[in-house]
Image (cartoon, rainbow, N blue to C red; front, side, top):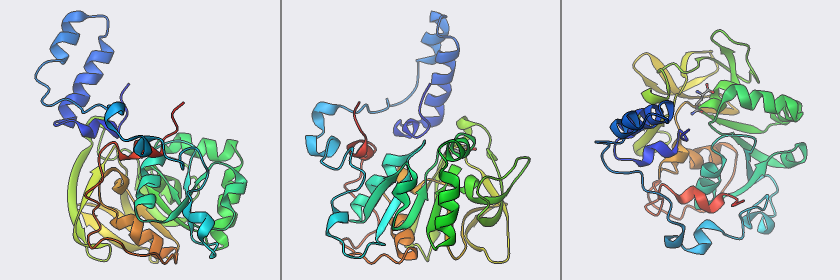
Length: 291
Ligand code: GLN
């Protein structure tokens, strides 16, 4: 099957996603596969490894737990972790690296040591919640939260952090919001838009929704950052940030910068704009381990 994030590389993601589903469903019917392959617009650009400079896809940092910025930092609480159990981990690592923020993949209990913040990426919330329990990370995460760890959940991460999930048990229950999973419909109802969220960036921020939940209610101590139509797309409490969209799948670094500030991290702002012009759809691959 196709990967939800990568589908956005084609000129017409929705059409292409439908075609992939059809071709996969009728893989042994050549006529149906032929029909599915026609009139799809521009192809998804593949990742032509020969055209990517080696340091971009296989840097010294790939495979290491923390990037080199960590070693030089005296202030221990300046590292942001990305929960590395399932989902869009590399895209977040890439954004943190672009901002010069020290990052760490968080897979085990020990990886929580001295973290300033933790990002829970998008993926599949039911799967992530099970893995948190299976690997015994849930209690460590909760203990660290109660010691002051700041947490940002993107999409599935928002679902994990929500106090209430329509029709299901909650997982971590750390922010007083109610969410409804898959509230826009199926994977094929994923979409892209943009919005201005002044406290995060004075310029419009691109928004990528992939089988996202909706935040349908927030408690008194939760501040709404973005409301669209009948739902809330971004919100925060004192220690938690939630976005139902995926800033890590766009060139915008604004939310990563905003979260770093929330974590109390001071870092040099190298660029005037919060959008990195050097970002490409395949930028995350430099953070991926090649098996
Ligand atoms: N639909 C997924 C869930 O309910 C979330 C999708 C995402 O993280 N992009 O867990």
